[in-house]
Image 1 (cartoon, rainbow, N blue to C red):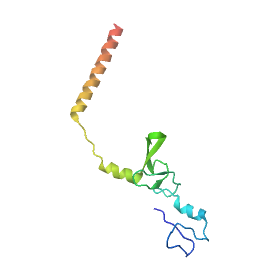
Image 2: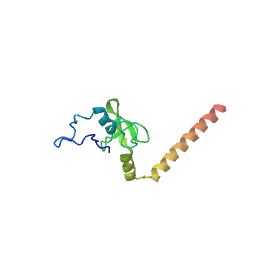
Image 3: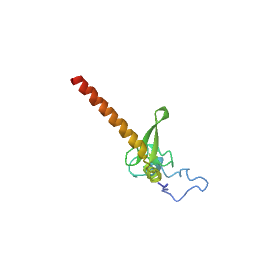
Image 4: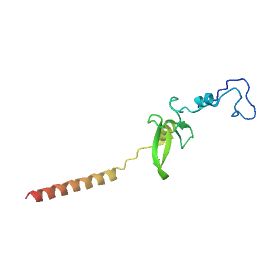
Length: 118
């Protein structure tokens, strides 16, 4: 995470977000608005799981369509954590049934084509 950088030695003890009079807002936003993943691009979205700011590049986050034409954003760190928890479950009975259905469709199409040729 990017940290605040104070150019002066004077920092208000009660609220660190109050700007000292010597600093400008532009010097502060340069450090604040960087992507949490690549530290190069500007923040465009926030991760919906951890809240960190990310740019919209594919190497930094995953974007999914969400309701009201919005995006559901997950940063790369959260994506990796989620992928570690996923398990692949294969039901061989369903696969056999699916293969049988596909074979039946293929044979029906072949029969129809052979009937058209005759």
